[in-house]
Length: 402
Image (cartoon, rainbow, N blue to C red; front, side, top):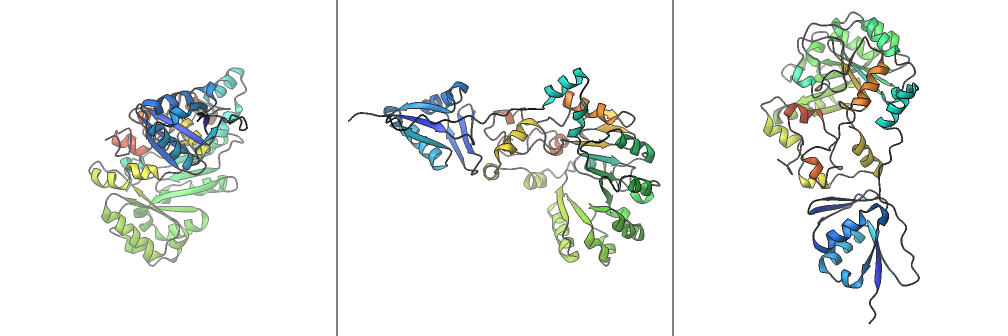
């Protein structure tokens, strides 16, 4: 019997990732994954598929397809609807497909070119949120504030007019959200800021629950005038809020450092019938076991991640939680991430700081391209690097690479 040749092609929505002797085919349209051993004849086929000029399609002989490893791999890929095997029978044409490759239209190089031409006004389109630590709180925690939005300690206070001038220096940017963190009840210019920004931006106020408990009447008034987010890290005195009807209309962020904290948070949420809430783990330096249980992912959890092609391209380009955010501390220093070095000062124009961050890539462009992630087949499925890694001084949050 005459032996036939075949075309084998991967679809444009299918990613083929190879790291040494491990490989992964990911169908971004369906979320299906095929993990395989990148060895022998399979490795030869994969190498050819990854050549740009191959256009994600290779020619295979029937003899090659009789190889058990090849046959099994192609069957799995086809079953996952990530690729197709087409006979060369004179009727079917060679499949036309393209490898999913990121094409950046306005990356850092584009903004550098604009800057050299003196026309880089569009750089501010990348700014979406400003977080002002307006002052310190007696109940602040500097370690927590490096992980999530939480008041810092200290006595420095940001000047209200300086804040307004800083925001105004951005002109008509894409800035939509402003967040104020600290003890707003003792901040003398809070009303001035709300009056200045209320008609232009979404303003959220984040305050520790202990400061709320010491200023219950003021907190109720504030809950009517602004988006109030109550940050809970101390669960010992929350009974003071239990009878307040207005707490149903504010947002709660429960910080948990242990299983007991988590149980307390869920109890509060249920008893107070809170709809708008978030539970965030925080690292204390001594709760590593809890943190690994709550945050670290194993392979099964990573395998369950489903991302679109666009979402994968985003993770290959920028840091999802950091991008577009600037944090201004009570001393006026501006950060793109609280765990890095300052990228500017509040006395500088917003434009200069945003351009500097994009040009130098302190945090906004921090992706999983370092060890051990760059040698992992799940590199672009895992979430972007977070504050947790930096606080723990660990480059990854998974059990695959301890």
